[in-house]
Length: 462
Ligand code: UGA
Image (cartoon, rainbow, N blue to C red; front, side, top):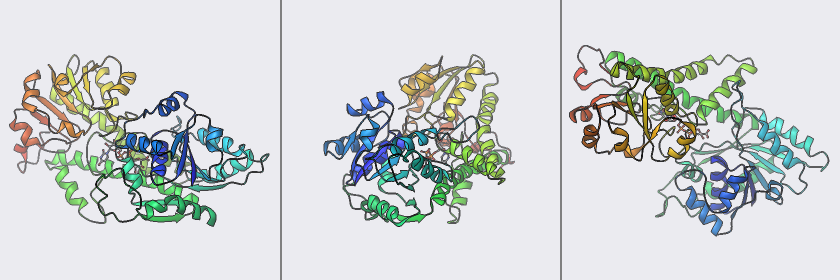
């Protein structure tokens, strides 16, 4: 099929290049001229494992192209995927103005596509509004448009893998032609028949994904309900962590056992600094606002949000307990990205943490394997370091704020000797308490007791 993709952010680039990878002819466009120039010159503006290889290969094969002229990009395509941003407004609602602009672009383009696929995360009922907007803008061109909602469940850091080997494909439609066309788009993935760029040696056997056909409203609701539930699981684990800390239990042991129940499941139970990124926090807010506007009291989710916001307070309090006064302390921070394997620092807990520490008068040295470039334009008066060892130099404490794998295997003896005081606060429970203490560190983490206090009087020294 001929497909156009509007919006070249994380979702648009992964969607466009992966659709090209499975055999479609794809043109991507974006109104950010600098980004388009970069893409046309072969550079990928974001760090996403495997993405540059897929883009390079599909461009070489002639199935993927970039066109800065949106009108030209959509001309002649069978379907157009809307992948523009829906950032939060000050009210918490999603800003849908970019979707409206795309509706105008498509509606007024006579030779544009007739199937419009909404992939951006939007509140339920946006599809209905989009349909109305398209026919309003298409009045003069006599355009008749069909709309499908096709929410994405991509995780940054594994987005290419998630696209090509999804656990489900959700398609919200209200007519048979759209369903048929959407099935055609995804058939190679449903059959798992394509040359997988992720597993060079061939994919491990995977269960083909389910193709779930729903109404457009349901598809939109599925996306918000999924992300909000993930957020809820994390906040739940974080509250259990706080309780475990008071009771001298170990949150990792607890959530591991709780997650063994197939009704509950093991993932998204990692306690720590809380969830960040450009999806969970904003989608949760938008979902709460949607509920409010429809007269449904979803205060459960407000609690989830409140708990998450308090994680940084809780962590700063821990630092204060360990260091007493924060003013003029040298704090080495390892990790800034909102999670590992991405350079994305939007709504990253570590960014807020660094700003809070600076507000307390502490001096911050910072290292992140991928996010330093982005950090430089966001954070001021921070000493950016080339590696973890540089960060540890004369530090009063080392804070682990992102769960990068490379932090698991650092030369800890070397780090200990570089520091002014061998103190670690692990905000992601990345390291093993007993091991760190054996290496001579004072070590505190989230919801895990000191080894010495286990099973004694129930008081945590964490
Ligand atoms: C999230 C969802 O996981 C995807 O399914 C969804 O498609 C995507 O949003 C989206 O809406 O586009 P992502 O933002 O990439 O994906 O990040 P997650 O992997 O969900 O992590 C979010 C945050 O939660 C991170 O800060 C992470 O460190 C934190 N987290 C995650 C925890 O604190 N504990 C956990 O157990 C898991």
